[in-house]
Each structure stands twice: as C-alpha cells, then as structure tokens.
Image (tube, rainbow, N blue to C red; front, side, top):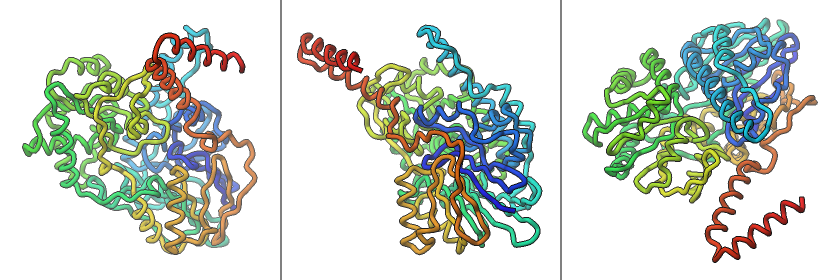
Length: 530
C-alpha cells in the first residue's frame, strides 16, 4: 500500500492545518482547519477544497482550535460522510466552538452584505452556518488516549497527549498492506510548553518513518516561567493599569487562554495581591468553553483550584450583545477579556475601538500575533490602526505577557524531536511562518538531530510519497490553489489600510490648504493614470 500526503494547509503559515493522506485504497484527513490572519489568506476559506470531500473516508482531529477544526462543517456540507475521530474533550469543545464559528460567520457576512447593498455589489454567503456546524457534530466519535483504533481499512491510529490544550493530541499513524512492516507516521499537532500549568508534558512514540512537526516558535526561546512568577508579572501590569477611570483589555482566545487568565486573576485577587475588580468575560464562546473545562477539570493539573476560580463571583459573564454593550457603563477600573486573541475578529474590536485612544487604557497581549492581524500591528507599536474602516490613534499602553503561550518554544521543539529517536524518512516542518521554520531547521541540522536532506518545508497543496524507511518523494500536484503565503506580505488589504493612514496623516500635517489640495491633485493624477 503506497502512502502519500498532500499538505493543504499550515504550509509556511500558522493556520488552516489540513493533511490529506492517501493509501491508494482510502483517503483520510488529519485536521481540517480554517485559515486566519490577512484577508488574502482567509479568502482560501471560501474556495472549494483542493480534494473531493465525498472521497474522504475519515478525519483524525488533533484538537479543537479553529485553525485545526474550523472547516469541518464546510467539509460535511460539501459531501463528507465519514467519521471524525477525536478525544472526548476535543469533541466536547468542538460542540461549542464550531456553532460559535458559524454564528460569527453569519454575523460578519450579514454586516458585509449591508455594505455591499449600499455599494451596489452582489451579496455573499457565509463559509458555513450555525446549522451546518450543528450537522457535523453527529459525525464525531470519541477516542481514548493511547489505544489503537482503525479509522479506515489498513490504517491504525492512536492519540498521544500533546500538552497544548484540553484534549489536544499528537496522532501516530501506521499504514500497512499486510506484507511488509507498516509505514509509521507521527503528526505532532500543536505541542505545549514544558512548563504548562494546565497540562502534563507531551508524549509521543519513537522509531518513526516520517514526522509532521509544528514550528510556530521555531525561532524563539521563551524562558520557562512557573505560574507563581507569571502571576507576579500579571500583578505588576494590573497595578500599573489600575487607574480610577481606566480599563485593562485582554484580547484572548476563548478556549484555554481565557480560562487560564481568569484562574490567575481570581487567585491574585483572593490572595490580596491585586484589588478585587470586575472581570468581564465578554465572549459567549468562552462562557460555554468554561463549562467544558469545569466538566473535564479532573484531567487538568491543578484541576480543583481551576474549578474554584472559574466559579468565582468576580467573573462576570456577558453572553448577549446587549450585556456586552452595557460594559461601557461600568464605573471605576475593570478588566475585559474578549476574543479574539489576535484582535482580528470578535468583541475585542469594539472595546479597542472605544479605548485605544485613551491613555487610561492598557491592552495586554497574551499570545502569538500572526502577521497581518490587528494584534501584530499593536505589538509592533503602530501609532494608528484602522478598525472597521475607521482610523484610531493608539494612546493606550500596549504590553505583553508571553508566559501564557500554549506552544513549545524552539528549545522544546528540538528536545521533542530528539526524544523521538532517529527518523528514517522525512521531517516536515509545518504550522509556522518561514523565519521560524528556517531557524528551527538550522537548529535541527546543526544539532545533528536530522540531516539537511531529511527536512522539508512544504508549500500549499504540495504532495509527497511517504515510503517505508526512505526519504519522501515530491509528487506532481494537480489543481494547486494560488498560495497567498508566497506572495508579498503584508497583503494588499494591509497595504491599503497603511496607505489610508498615510494619506490621512499627510493631509492633517500639511502646512496649509493649498498643500492639501496639491496632495489631492497628485493622488488623483496617479489614479487616473492607471
């Protein structure tokens, strides 16, 4: 049985994870994620899959994050009739995350279509709806950690704890034809840091033919900070932010990050290290995900402490849009935790729009900020940003706590692969931007972990044969999509926003009206000369 793979996402980017394995008799996916970040990259979500969903026999899911699971409803709506295998916690989280994703898309498309009507443009449809998301949930089947199962004939798989988030896993795959020893493949999924306070350290097997390895922080080293030291940093930020008329805005992923931050804040408040102030959990998804965390608290390290904190009266859930808007009426210093973690969608955007101009506000970034996102612009210290088509000056204090990261750093990634022993075939670096992948590849080769000819950094829709005990072979890839990652970045949407800011700044700072008119004349001449 000849095994091959097509890399249909997370190729030189951190989103859209999707691997299509083909045994010659069956096809199955590992993950089916949504693309996030710049609009050009997100546009891939609206395109047809580069494979026929009706020909996919099963999906093996590493974890519930939307960049790994987010296109499953679209897959089902396009004709997939197989089973989605995932750990029990992952299945429970997907049951709240996928309908929420469908709701977000319906709302965003509704707003876009209102603008399109005013501009005389044709309406667009959401990638999928809440109804589509509800329909795919019946396809989920829970699998335990560490137990072999057969997702399709001739293929065995088992899930190993990846330490990244609740329910997250690396997936070991064996593909055999009954004659020779099976081809053994390991897909790392997203790997957690060694110092995670919620999860045990990641585990995985050795003696592998091929490995697909995440590389998000392949170019960074993040000192391992325990939760006591992390809380000290958080307390210092909060004490400086706690102005009588101020606010601490925390853009945070609704699943895992929000619960971890709430655990720290409540613990600090109850210990008297910081003042007790309202913590608005302004995310319907985070509220529902918190219930899943409470249900699975026994699987977490510090589970009892986490359970007590998440049930504290200090946390104010605001599920409805009306409740979210009423936060603006809050008096005195308060904390708002809202999605998304990269500030590229969700309720955090209207809080940022309201507060970024104010020196009384503090924005605390808590995780990876992908290129082209609003979070990355704030992280880079841009003096002005555009939110929902409007220019906003950034006078708020922008700070960052990186100790909440759910991803292994460069040293931990090298250590993880070293523990797998000698890889006989290829090591594919995925789920990372080019600088991170290149830096990780250098570490691996200079450290003698892998040979240079064993390392591969695939591009979108590239296909490879995965032989037993030998190097992968590139295959002809038909029907490849245009790869936004290979184009100039930031994309044209980012460039347009930057240009609009530059025009506004030049117009405002011109010496007089005559200079402004001259500028407008030059710009008009350029446009008319197209």
